[in-house]
Length: 243
Image (cartoon, rainbow, N blue to C red; front, top):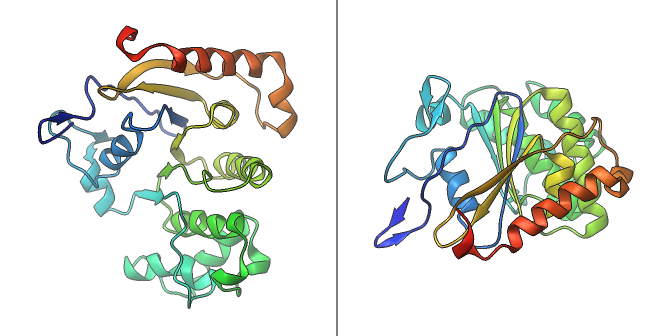
């Protein structure tokens, strides 16, 4: 992928099996978000292609088969949580505001009790859960998440990781997740794809063989620590030395 004379991404080969949880882990500037936008059909690659089954990324987006969750929830302030979740379904003509899908999605993220609250009445973690519910209400088969918990405090972030792991197990969605956090990547993922910079590329793929469901105290187990150490060491390798 090039922007003018600048090569942002090169030699990328990413395989995401249906129903899997794949994390893109790497330092700032390695192209994680750019790759996610390519997968989501927002950016067109300058070479190569993205295939989602038999479809291109843009065809999958047109079929509303890809959901996107960004770093900040971007909720409409004058709409309730329920109305924010229902909004995309109405705009996409996939349902009506009162068809029940919004309430089901809010129930899934644990916010049924807050359906009638406005964004200013929600904590940061609750607002981000509304954002996740909004994407889930579209019932996409693929969920792309660009550092959705990066702005949260550590305690809320840990709780959101457990919530997301539960949602993934309950829905069977394919999730591609971007993060800078090594513990977050190990906790959530089936596979961690490690990216390097100058230019952005894949330097390692680590399959995470930890039992599910995963709970908070798994971070203290020897196996979790071993995975974290491997990823940390890989990220510490000078970029010119990686292949």
